[in-house]
Length: 147
Ligand code: ATP
Image (tube, rainbow, N blue to C red; front, side, top):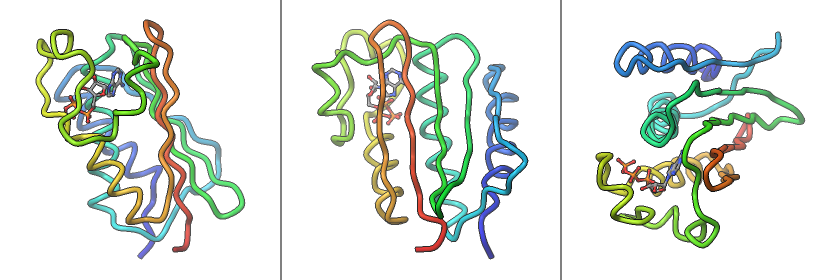
């Protein structure tokens, strides 16, 4: 049974909203956004990205979903502290956290993004980070609908 990403994003956003009292908006057109994949793992992927956005920003978080040419795109965007350019190459390494001192006030092991990347690889997709230090971060995941 295909995974309904709009429903999954809505559910996950609601759950995290209730837990952390943060605004998480889900943007999607009228189109269905469905793919063949592991629902639990994709939920975990979303939780990792949203948990980071919650930890490293204070304002509303935007999830945007779309599909074209058989590829689903899901992005999680925050307007938080961003990631310094020189730290970008290490983000997906296990146990990596930007600037220990800065990160220490927020809990975390540095495993989240390495797990996220693993889940994306299992779905034969791609994960990309766009970040401006001090302005915010957008992480986009592209997943083929049929793998
Ligand atoms: P956890 O394993 O609990 O997720 P973590 O957030 O430290 O802990 P990762 O999710 O792997 O670990 O993220 C690695 C590092 O990348 C973080 O420590 C943080 O410095 C940086 N980072 C990740 N997402 C964001 C974001 N949305 N905004 C700013 N920095 C981020």
